[in-house]
Amino acid sequence: MELSELVKRIKNLEIQGAEAVARESIKFLLDMEKSGTSRDDILRAAETLRTARPTEPFLRNCIKVGLKRGFLPVLEQISSSKEEIARYGSRKIKDGYIVYTHCHSSTVVRILEEAKRLGKEFEVRVTETRPLYQGRKTAKELSELDIPVTLFVDSGVGLALQGADMMMIGSDAITSEGKVVNKIGSRTFAYIAKSLGIPVYICTNSWKFDPETIFGFEEPIEERSPEEVWDNPPNGVTVRNPAFEMIEPELIEAIITEIGVYRPDVMMEVIKERYPEIFE
Image (tube, rainbow, N blue to C red; front, side, top):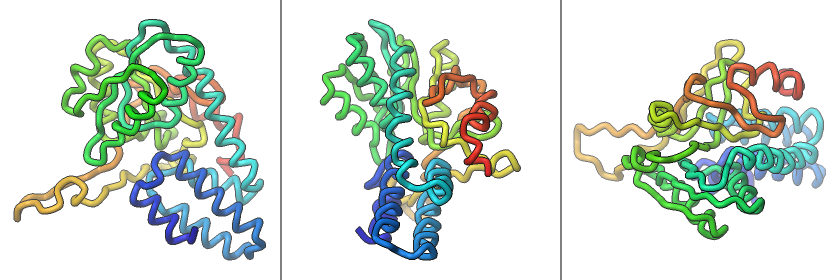
């Protein structure tokens, strides 16, 4: 695959999810390295990939560590970390639980798969996530795993959360303040969950922490094409299509990572102690 084709697939969401984007990008750079491509060309390709999605600190961190320590160890970390997150996250799910989720997170799906493997009986509710309907991907994958799942329209989130025992969602970025960036709708739905006394768990690789936020950098919120929402709006109608939003730490019960389960306010110090290289 050419670099331009990979970037196009990332931008068009043919490759979805921060971990999938990082995995495919690191594989591409590893293949360049194996083929004997010059260091300068690898650095240029890395920069192109690094900017393919603005709200992707996981990709930036993976590239940073890969350029310093090697791309193969980064690929191994991506795979092993998901299994550790699944181990921690599955412990939170009890028999009879109703788990609510939003959008599509391969990490959340893996947690639910592990809970089922452990013999736990539970059901899942997921909102569709307009305008590109990534929630359908979650529902399809769960149905293929024989996990009972119900898909709700986004505006039906109040009903989806009614009677739920927990909310589990992924993350695209974690800031130094313990804020979490995730798919649009996540902040609103976390507010509703909080008001109903439903704990909100963020399930994510700790490498999604953005060290640049320590110095006042604000995580960019990607605005996608308005045509995804309405391809031919009337004159005078402005269409906004933000892809993500920020969830305040006070709405979050805990962040489930490969290094453990922690409150949002302590995440930065825990990550810095475990992975100092992403702060270099």
